[in-house]
Image (cartoon, rainbow over all chains, first blue to last red):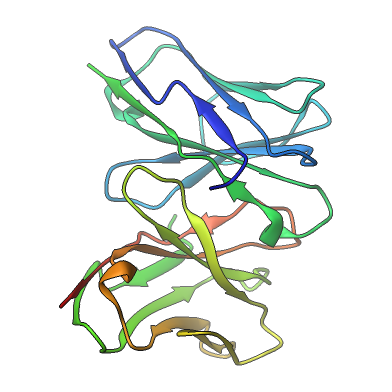
Length: 114
Length: 112
């Protein structure tokens, strides 16, 4: 088990609503990346946060936003939910500059949009 | 745009057999190629990884073969065991930025 935790584990929302997902990074890690994993697909990079600022974004619209806090934990916010947002949302923590092999994934939050 | 293509989508192997999963990439800036193992209800876990300066890396029963000129790499699982049944993802990263591009996954089932 990694030291990366995510909450909640499951969530059901309706189209048009807003959702906030949370991630606590592993001790010693200062970078958090968020991924979306649709059913039967590989994870897709949403964005990364380092030093409380966005440090790169994948091909996701602005209604996907995030925050990183001084303790390196992070939130993913999704506004105006769409049915296609139903997916497993994974966060991964790492230490900037120490290579991608130090990136550890949490168990994910499964979001269902009805 | 799918930058890492993975095949097969699913694979059934007898216990003790060899499991082979193949991937191809397009972006020549990729310089790190990990394989992840994911069990149901869990996040992906790093299994083994390779950099393009070597053609093969072996860790226990798991081997990555890498062909830089063909932009292809593969995972071989020797002596496959039922406990290896999981979904495997190849992936790629560039510049150590930890913004990993994943393949579509291969669901492996090892039958006794």
